[in-house]
Image (cartoon, rainbow, N blue to C red; front, side, top):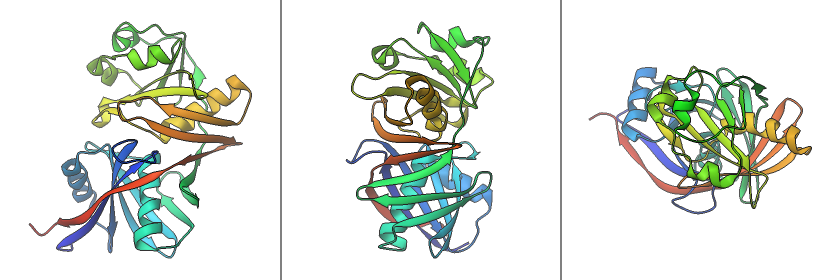
Length: 265
């Protein structure tokens, strides 16, 4: 293991600092044990840390929350693309990230936006599961769907903003987190995403949840191109386009810091 490792922190799905979702990006010169990557992610204490290995416009990518490795992460992929295009391979307009479960994930830069392609994961309707009422802590569900995370449709944007889920009850649900969503006032739809079982009480701006939300709202609204807003405290703006079995997501990115990890102690 090298004595030092470069590290970058980027706010993704935003065009300004201190908004969107912060992700750490750690480029590697050689593979690291998963336990070391997990320890770094825990030390960073961000919703995700992305680790990169490769070059020439093609990079292996792995994502870790403070608690575990995940199969897919949108905001950390945009953050990784920003780092590759601005620091590791300046001037590059397209990069392909090779993921373990979902194969190649290309990201293209168009002006100030970074567009990634992720799988489309339309949710299926289901009856409210046991424990949902406790998890919602008073919020009234209109519909319930699932595709990895549990997706709960609320009446309007105000209900999504006002919701205060019981995170212990959310963590006990047999789903990968809880998504609350509703039509938006100044956009097509809004959402919030709670993933306490992954060490993330509320994720500020999430790409992977929009793999589920984009096809859900595209079918509901009858159009493939959607403007979404994640109405967390930090907030995030996500442009979504459903293209068959893929979702193209666009968002901005802003560098917050760059430095080095003293891995040698």
